[in-house]
Length: 257
Length: 334
Image 1 (tube, each protein chain N blue to C red):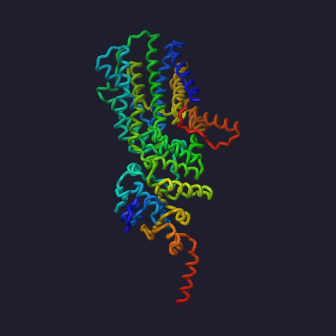
Image 2 (cartoon, one colour):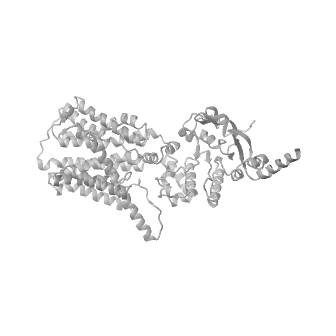
Image 3 (cartoon, chains in turn brown, blue):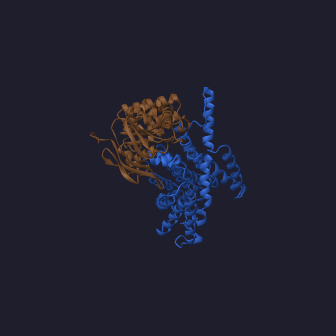
């Protein structure tokens, strides 16, 4: 039972594609101002859960509340207006458009041109790549650079909640470090972050809260450290102690026989 | 840089303004009028199809609608054959834009290739309607009021009105390209679903662009009808027109601002000159076929983009920089 008012609350969310359900009753409340990382094995429904938040997938049953307001059934446009911006797993820049145009598109829901100009100046300062490669086609940037421009674009709406779907995917170690620092920076600016990360150890280290999704349900949740240090979770999803756990269970079997 | 560019545009405009004053032969000023009409239509076509990536092969619907608007209003209002008929030219554009709305409501429900097929189908619906309805004059077409202007000066007013339509279409295209609306069209061209994910009202944007692009094409059709004085359904609802303006834009550079203007200027004037010199209406088709093969094989993004990229590579080599592919945006205004 939460005593604080959650920023985002999932209540019995059931969703999927075609006939099958990927999410089978997700219940979770996300705290405001933190970084929440969702981890879990492939096919557990991590990305599907994010799609239900950004309105790209409508749950079959259940409800999602953003600051107490139900958002299921709202269009992606309406959800953007509420202050939820998603950076999808695949690179989502418009390859044939310039970097500047891509970033500008992030704020096209904002009518006041002076506000757009202000925010553009802010993201150009935060992400020098936006200024340096402003006139280049987005498709000519490297994967890491594209990711940073995507971050810049999502900040143009000054969102309350930034949803990141596997932001580290395909990045080299140096760019990964920059990306993680950027996520921290966005969080320190007051943005709440909900991210799905395949590199679970990295993601949980970065996060104030962790959620383990398994077979479409929340198996465990807690602070990032709690999830990271949970022996079962470490064995199953974080790789490190799987061999040790297997060895232990093998010796147990031998002893019993 | 901007001043430099504006200077070139003003110089080009001055040349176009001076043309009928320098060249008074009606045969050549007629070529000028047709070239300008096609420049306006190709630019307007590009404003939707080039920016959004939805290739419309049914633009003759708007051209024919503009032409019939001119003929029907001139006849039903019993207008005299004089300069007052020019007031019906913008009306042709308005009617074309209004017609574009139901056409777009049907055609824009589908994407890309299917859209192309639907626009062709709708074109034939309009052509057959014009042939079969009595109010359009059927196969006999419609006669417009005779304009009793002296032969040597007859073309001049038409030329300047056509130039006005070109300037209007080019300005509209530039404004759209630089606006947030244009940005949304470009985003749709790149990835419609991603654009929707960013909150772009995809269908509304496409429909608005479609209706806007019909306006100058409709005006071109109305001016053509007034200039020729007699319209037939097969000439104003002409499939060659549909293909021609698309090819002109592709030749110059699809999605660029200057490409369709340049494409229409080169191709339409060449076609008219070949017809005039050799009295062979089909020769241009052979030459055009060869030119398009070369462009599609060696400059698939169009002449303007190919030149711009070559220029950028040359500048990069000179500065000792390395470039990978094109560094400029094909949709950029220049």
